[in-house]
Image (cartoon, rainbow, N blue to C red; front, side, top):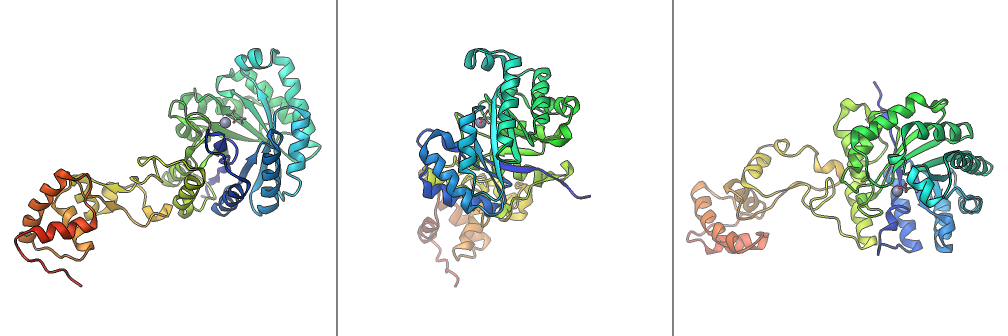
Length: 390
Ligand code: KIV
Ligand code: ZN
């Protein structure tokens, strides 16, 4: 049975770029956009055109450049925002306007000093106006995570009737639990008239570390688009991480869902974005962190050397990482030492390995990590002469 496709909506260049200190120049944005297109994302949110002339130009240039993905520009439910986004998106082969408004009681009261009926009217007017420029209009119900489901369904029904093609249900504050977010999607699927005319989209923030789990709960309950960023960068604690959702769907075939992403480009794309934004990837970051395929404890190393699958659920090659690494520390055992020694040219007998291991432990107690050059030093310091092969 063929798998249902989950569309990947990448917002690295919009929500991701909102990270303090991570401003990209126009050229850097173009290079990243081209890479995202090659990676296979379905939609690139290129920016917020009304926010500055620089953002307008970047969206315009990206719209000219991108050949495969839909190019999207963000707006508020404000006429001038929408008109400006439409102008910036003019060169796009597949343009999308992303418009919306806050729907939670807190947003309605404090941001808009308004009421529910007036918010629905503004939402509908924004979608109708956007439809005069482009066919593909995505509507976001900001703070949907804290919007009660009945009202959210009313908003969704009204904007779908106005022509919205995608319904973005953002957990803007990262508040929801996965069950709750999944339940929200299910409720909308079951209670919004005309829902079959639109795609439900997950847009989750990571304030409680649940962005990825919430997005997966969303697609398990009927959503078919995930909004995410490379390395999970974004406002505050970030957005759903693209590489995580892609690999979760791939590693769990029983979900019967997949994306069009070329996963072999994930690691290099992560490195590229990190370098261009000047934002390091935390070493223990799932999928793309420096330690994601590194093994340092003796028990794990022994297992991985015997068979990689004992401690790895992903083949590193599938995400573009050359191979798993066996890191030598004071917690490493003989198997890891023999393995690394062999890689640098020493085939140790059991007796030799015992001797070298004693020397290794002394060295390892004084040093955090043992590098290839240190292996030569350690072996030279043992009493027996061990020949280097090759
Ligand atoms: O988090 C959010 O609600 C957003 C919207 C503007 C889509 O980023
Ligand atoms: Zn967001």
